[in-house]
Image (cartoon, rainbow, N blue to C red; front, side, top):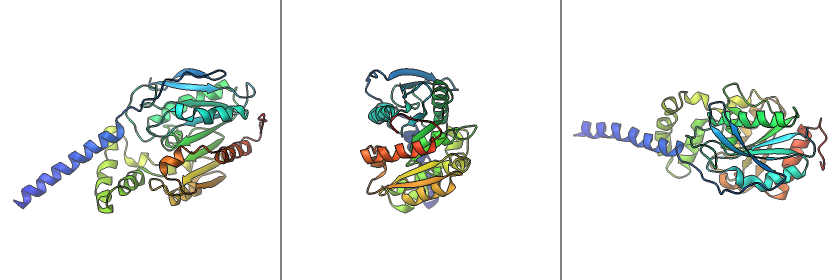
Length: 291
């Protein structure tokens, strides 16, 4: 009897873990269809693997003004960051926001913790770089968007500045922290290996490929690591590890009292000014109107 129970558990737990993994990677995040108002314009981009991406471009003060590529987090969309993008545009920066695959108005696709989304980030970066005639480009990468900026097949984006908001260090802790925030630690310890090793079947890579902290070590541009002070998913200690790993000049900004969701949607005047100061300093070779 006992062997049958053990056999049943041995079959049931992995099956349930697979279903849980499917729920994590599949699902489309819709967005309201709000057409961009001039001078912004909606555009369509194509990632290297043929996925069609919806994007919005805000012009800068000049045709060759520095640019900012804004990449949203999971289950978000570009529309939610329109006010922030418009504000940066008014400061003189050119700004491009896009819906990552499986989000907003872009093509439906599985979520992959930044792996295939990195192709979306690359498409947006290359387009904005060309649009601004080779001017330096900074990136605001929020959670999934930050991972996408780092995990490209050819390495991180060649941006001149990275503001990485609530970006997980590695897939192991990303999964474990999220389970532990809602369930007992033993369950998190049991399920994390069963979930993270699904990457081999789902994405064709092992979990060691899903480590933004390793990719960040290759970044020589200035990096601002932003974390929520009450974030249980990507806690401040993980942010400090990311800061230490950054290959270039780095700084850490802790948003006191904010959990993961609150920090990824942070958009206060003080926060905007902090980001602006960072990008002006990092891109100080270029004059930006209003900065």
